[in-house]
Image (cartoon, rainbow, N blue to C red):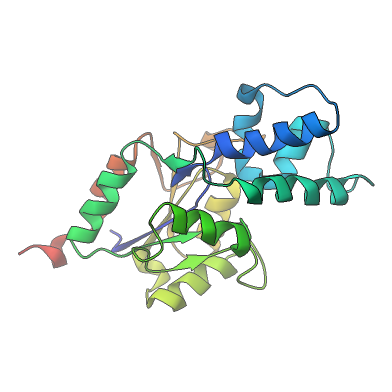
Length: 222
């Protein structure tokens, strides 16, 4: 049983797909390109700029045009990163329940801090989270365990007491490497080539409320 929850951001805690897709569409329009349908982009959101540029332009990070295009994409996104982004259905009641029971929760994302923190702040989550770790906070990003271990140090948590929840295989790999229990968020974007069943997560959930059953509340009963 776990005594704390750590969440990935995009596709797990917050549905950021509308704003990321809108940024890509603005870039495509600027370049006179056809707009990629939202339904094709949504599964790629958890891969950040890499996934969006692959979906919108067919580019991989080793392409000559990738770096300047990624910078332009991120500039578009930074200008409007919390217009339509919202917590996933059921997430706010879950967070309130955790807080009422004294169960800490935090955020560990591969989104760089300069983009993650304004988004988290705009959603009113900054003061509520026990820790916030971005993709450039630690020396290495997920799937390495460094960000999760940094989060534990920041929040005064033991990795073995934490569950890490994510919608990408890198989240599960990072959680396992950090010695945490892992939870695959099947309601998220799931945009990798490996089926969710192959991720080897300890648990799979289809709604945030299912996380309550995985939390040890014995020490919080009154």
